[in-house]
Structure formats: C-alpha cells, structure tokens
Image 1: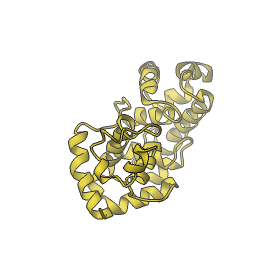
Image 2: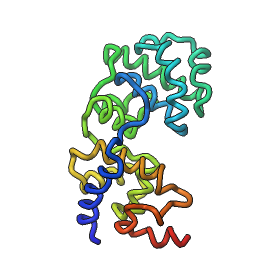
Image 3: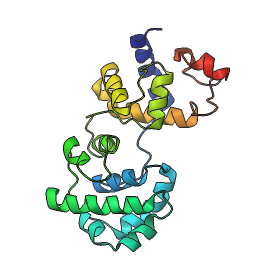
Image 4: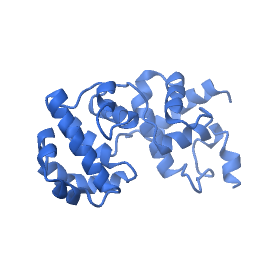
Length: 214
C-alpha cells in the first residue's frame, strides 16, 4: 500500500480505535500544562499526575513558582526523574513568564521555546492541548517509533519526523494524531515485544511481518 492510501486508512481507523484520545496529563490551565509537561521528561504521565495535585495547590501563578523555596519545590517533585534540573527549569521559566509575558503562558511557539526547559515538543503540547492551536505535531518516543514502523517516514530526527507528518496529515488532525499514536504505542506497538498479532493496523504496517517474527 502506498503512503497516501495508508494515511487515509489511518485517519479512518485511529479515531475508531481511540475515540477519546487526549493529553493524559491532568491540568486546568496553560500554566499547569506547561509545568506538567516539563515534569514529564523522562517520566511517565501517571507519575506526573500523582505529583501535580499538591504542586498545583501550592503554586497557582507564575509568581508562586518563582517565589517558592527551591528545596520545597524539589520536595514536591522529588519522585519525578531529574527533579533538581526540573525545579531549576520551572523556576527560571516562571521568572521569564513574569518578566516577559505578565505571568501568562504565551500562545506562541517562538516565545515558548525561548523559556528554559521548553523545547519544540513541549511547546507543541501546550499550544495544541491548552490553546487548541495546531502549530505542529508532538513527536515523542512513541510517535517517533510508530512513524517509522508504519512507513510514514524513515527519518529519526524529531524535527524531520514532525515535518514529514505535517506533509502527510491535514492540519486539523495534527493535535490528535500524536495522541492516537502515543496510545497505540503504549497499548500495542510497544518498543519491545510489539503485539503485531492483535494489532488492528498490522495490515497497514510495513514492519509487522518483521516485528512479529522477531
């Protein structure tokens, strides 16, 4: 099956498989999502969601994050990996939000990636999930892996993968596309031991025969 036909089939099947696909981080506003996404680096969403209720109750504004004693902040997020680095990033980002954006999270890609601890992936998460802006496609390890396995791209660089997906999929699907692929990667097309036998996309996947025989 050629790539355009595969894309059309994916756009039919993925929504049916994952009709409730959404960001699995719990948040109530753009600032909470920004902080949660910074915490999610090298950490599961489940763990982040266990940490953030107490954190969000303690820090409600960018000024709160900037002012909280570093030791207290580190204690609140200690169970996430690299918590010291993340605490420093959160506080520096909070200070920049205060000095540059009146304490508000900007709905702008360039402004977001200028913040500490915010790369393109994090910026795309915030823009897509908090503001509903399909500026790009979130490329995490699941999206990267599935994009190659499904024959959507041969690239390994996240930015090149994102560009490839943007060319293949209509803009109105960019936000949800990453949620679909992340869920499928977690539930079926895992990095190790992918469940090709029960995968409902196996007939579309150029890698299925190779992976199922591995």
